[in-house]
Length: 428
Image (cartoon, rainbow, N blue to C red; front, side, top):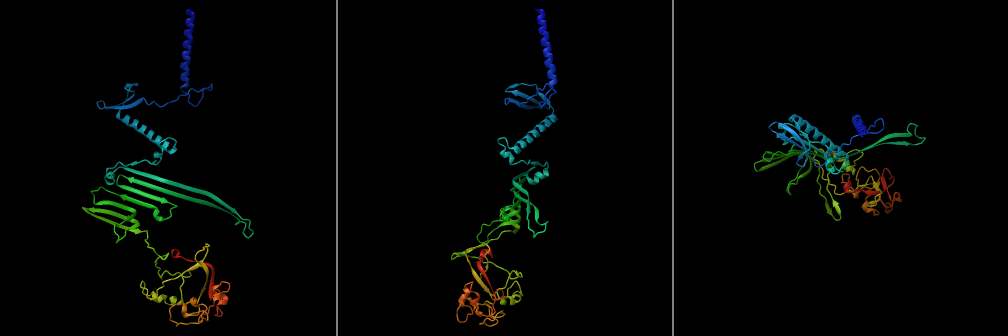
């Protein structure tokens, strides 16, 4: 019996020593690397349960920090004593670890509640300066960008087996690049300065892209507010209307109970009034005679050409007593418009009393104003005794036979245009 007990004791001692040596050997093995037998004894680190409470207590007598881990009212570890420098380093490392972990979770977006964190991935910038704080009312700089940027990159290859082209020009390789940017930026410097910026490459109007900087001191200062960028000047008056879409400088001052608002800017908007009458719109517009462009703008008659230099001799005063009250412009119908279309014919000598290019009969003096009744091409008297035009001119097919004046040919004496469209006021 004694011999059997001694053998059992030796086996237990040998087995225990084997486990101790095996544990010492496996302690150097990593979790993802197997040992010589192909078996891995790794460790699984789990976070502490919610019942564990970590607490740091400061002792003013010893000027030390004590770290305790407790469950309920019972401490389950020996306290760790830290000096103030060690405590600051420990807290800094832990805060940095939590901060970067929250930013990684926000960027991945896999956890619940990360939508709000994704809206502000740029951290606040802290400025340790009393002068900065006295000017801007705070020590932080915050930037909140929102929007999207899309970039399209591609290549376009074309090949045409056209013998009229040279071999080098039959194939062509070009790059296709397109970008779309929609960006909104909100920046705050302290509590007094705010920057707003909106930029969109697909915006319809330029005033939709805004840039504005606001500086708003305390209510006791003389300068109440300063705005730079896109500003506005609304007025609560029907006599003098305010202006919108201004770009410049605006300030609001306060002297006791007196308030002053001053604006120095460039107006980027325009106000127009449209009058509707008889089912149509009437709109007044101005066109300077100096804005004449050769081969683009044309005189209505020789009278205006001969009087042009004389009328503008003392510009901006127009030295003439002629006023055009109504005119129509007809152009080629390239958009296949079906409203306000017709076949038209234009005579070079229409309304002229001198400088005519044909042998049309003249019924007015050389110095007469331009008028349809000045010669035989009067469109209001077609078919009458004094007219040199017959009703055949109203048909585009018999137009030439309706002209009774000899040697009047198309391209010099007149021009015709089929299915022409009338230009509206909004297209001028």
